[in-house]
Amino acid sequence: MASVANSPFYILKPPNSPFYILKPPNHTHYKLSSGITTSLWSFSCSNAQFLALQTSKHKSSTIKCFATDKQTSSTEISSTARIRSEVLTPFRSVRMFFYLAFIASGGLGGLIATTQLIAALTNPSRALDASEIAKGLGIDLGAVSLFAFLYLRENKAKNAQIARLSREENLSNLKLRVSEKKVIPVSSLRGIARLVICAGPASFITESFNRSEPFTEGLVERGVLVVPLATDGNVPSLEFEESEEAKDITTKRKRLWQLTPIYVTEWTNWLDEQKKLAGVTSDYPVYISLRLDGRVRGSGVGYPPWNAFVAQLPPVKGMWSGLLDGFDGRV
Image (tube, rainbow, N blue to C red; front, side, top):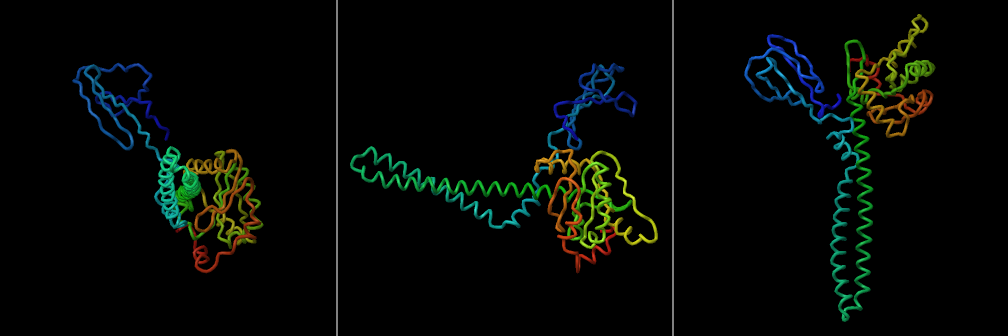
């Protein structure tokens, strides 16, 4: 929802009427009946603050609404992403702590050496010590520069990792429709399926659907499920052959293409962010493949390489195979 923090609007309630009238701020006053006393009060609702004024000249209630700027951002870093980052790189915080300690130690040593060097240069009796003090000062400055570089590099890698994990966490919260009565988040499929997101115009998705047909059996064996995301607002045409001879392959193709993204705006926002980070034009059709654990495995512009998926991904076996065999949307 767009922020309207600096654009208040008014709600007028005529007397003895259950209806409210929205009044834009650039309009003139509405003339209503008069005759009651003035009262002013304030209250809050959801994320917006309201001021309500009932005037003596207008027998109506005027509500002035200011929405707050606290919007939920797709780039907001979640605590889960920070925890996952710590788990993936458990010694990074320790390294960064020691880098800061070495920077502080080198800086303190450099400060002391600087005062000693000034004293040696101003005192002829200590002039012979100046070269030795200058050498120590150079070592301190070099150490500070080195550990500052290491700290900044480590911090940059940490921020990049947390941002990536946060985007993956945002993806895991997006919703999918499995059947008419079943909606699940992407996170429900972790450890169960490898998702491949096909995003582009409806014609692109239809062609991706047609190109996947020769590899249907191999893709299903590898736990692949496709998420068709039409970015042009049209519905892709996915036609399945219903003949008795093709019953088995049709069942597998329906299983492969059974997922439907809902709240498409949220999906599109997440996809636009991914494209922006990858330097891809927003109107280009793309595919994004995920690992079993929900992390992004790879992505590219154009049609998904179904043959490469079959060649590179191992078949789902053991416990995961059993879960996939029984997967019908009731996760």
